[in-house]
Image (cartoon, rainbow, N blue to C red; front, top):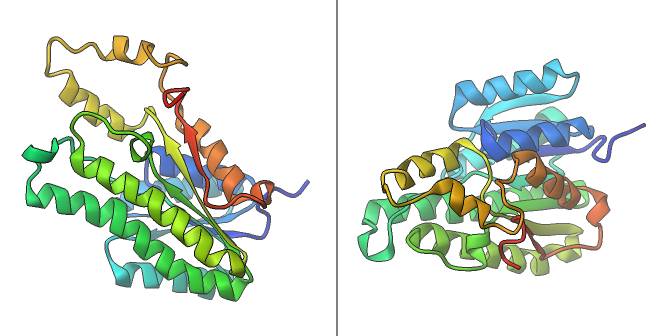
Length: 255
């Protein structure tokens, strides 16, 4: 039986580990040819090799989402080697934990350049290729902190609110071209990036991370694969009448 994405070409940014690697694997299992992209070349190549070892189609490409030139190369590669670009998963992101008044210029710019401008550059690069392909689906990684605030994380929250905004704007702008633009808004996901944050939290002897997690309505962390199911839904024709949506995958936190 053909997969949901049979014959489609998907580009996933930030796919060397965590959620991005999970998304790449899930799309590949549904028949997509996946371009795994990241700046962590060794890890990204391993993800692509793992996908191929499972009998699916994948290649690795270095992509710094801050670079206009890297985005142009990625889209050109998709069209030249695989014939089209049908799906873009704008997943790459970083996190700085500084509160607004403590955030340095460099910290602010790093987060905005990656999380916000990187998504903008990805959409800008992908849209013409998707127009040539007759349509496509763009899925951006926002966050529950693009829908609500939190203590600290000034630049991160600002960047994720921007991802929600550009998702809705692009959805309304490109629906005429059969290009759908949606976002997922994960809560706490069991990834290497979260583990790095938890190490910082645990420096405070009064903070109990496990107790914090037990307060979630579904009292555990999300698995990356659970976010990938929402990404697959938005990437595929299962969501053919959905655009401009932001889907929380947060264990009920926003509720």
